[in-house]
Length: 383
Image 1 (cartoon, one colour):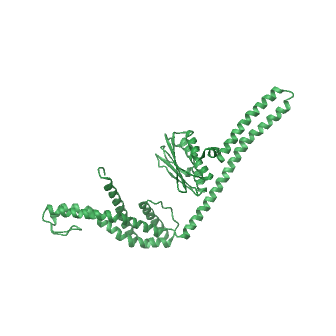
Image 2 (spheres, one colour):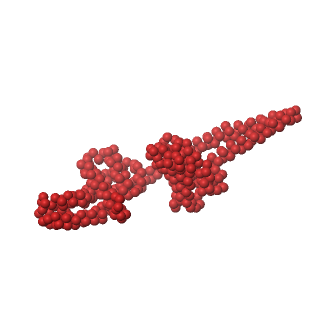
Image 3 (cartoon, rainbow, N blue to C red):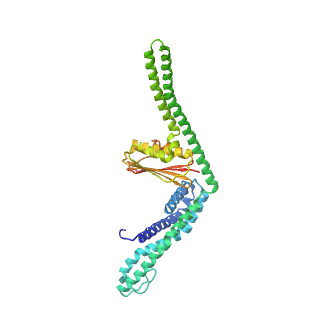
């Protein structure tokens, strides 16, 4: 498509995409009509309708979430697909087929010079001049018809498909309750795991050091009068242990709510985090406005975990963090040029990131094909 002006290229891409969608709709409507008895079975109708919901969503640029089985809506879509898909697909077939066949029959005019073989303007052909002029008129008309009619017709059919198959308010309520129930269970599980981790860190680390400090100071107190030098050594050891205990305690506190967030806000905290990342990291932060502390914490932990995974697993040479605010939605996008293959189901902290986001009714999406790049997008509502 090199050399085609931008407007012409955009026209071509829209027409091709709309025409391809409508031709697929024609095939789907034909199959639906032929296999209607089989598609009345819910277990067969559900995957068939879901496939075409995804097609319609892809044409309109909308994400389509899996939908619970709804036999009545599936049946309504089967009828709508036949009633609207056959004529819409037939029009696309006539337009695109005419565009392909017109040059052929123009060149072969001598085989049937008096037959009305062109779809728009058909007159008796007496020579090459008449053949090319009539063929050009047909081509221009069919191209204009395809450009004007096919893209909006395809979008109208896609919107109709999504509207017919859209969940009812009752179904949406059931989905929402199910999602909230699952999210609540995840939050409780994550909260319990976090409490166990904090308890383990305090018990195995800070508490053990404090016990050792107490024992050293007790021994130093007993030996102070008899052996002041030994008591002094024990006091110095206890002092060193105190410093270590304070360091561990600050580390535990940092995992609960990083002090850097309170001191510098999310922008400053992420800037500091980038300097400690294991790979060169570029930070791009737009105007964020006021953000609730819980949202700041989840965003910070998500970026921290993502950068840690990049350093440990991705073999990346560069990473980037982009944080933006769109109305009431805070979006953090972490990308790297590593080997890809990241999967929340395999752990690596990604499932914990998803649970943290879900606790605030947020989302996490991962795009990580084998070979990379990996892009993790976390969306958090700020309202």
